[in-house]
Length: 302
Image (cartoon, rainbow, N blue to C red; front, side):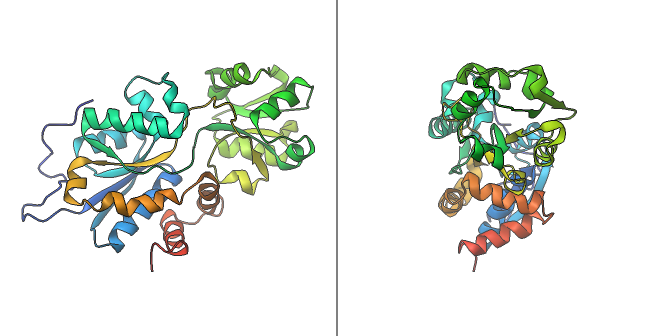
């Protein structure tokens, strides 16, 4: 991928205005509430330190936001480390299964191809995972995927709610191969659409005996539904760590950006993101309100 040679004359994301002053930083996000929430944290933090911003949150799905960044229509948004494997057609590289190795590879590839700078990643992963009802997990001493595999092999009464994509496109089969277990068809409830809110809801309500749900690692519903996220202890799944990425021109215009954003991103781990996501996804609070509350809680805003 190559960045466009020239930005549109109307682009709000130009690094410098016609008056010679640095232009406001256009902060954007994907459609997900997590992406918008982190985007709002970054935008509010920059504003508090005298960096003007423009809010372009929830711009679109990954291809839309990515194209906008490369064309200069936006300046910064939160990506996920493992997605770089698809951007650069190297999804099979084992680096994506390690947060730091995947971050380093993605940062190198994106800068070389597009002069996109990867800032500090969160210590979290939004990868696909399995979560078991807490009462079931505690009764059967389940904390890791290895524990879960042993439970299945031993005849455990597992019923998994998942999407057709998860069941049929290789993710479940990959987990089965890595951990040495096999799910029978009668142990799978494949939900139309397969949104994680539906799989989590099915496990919480014990719908058709469901006690295990396909989830994303930072889903807000996991805690609210009294589920326990199983640790991918053998690193089967790629790591999808939230990472702000920005155009190099903007970093040159505002060289303080990396240092401002670093402590914020270092404060975000999976447990913290699940708690904050629950406020947006379950309680219905706005991403901006939750973002501002968190910044004040951690002392990033006065």
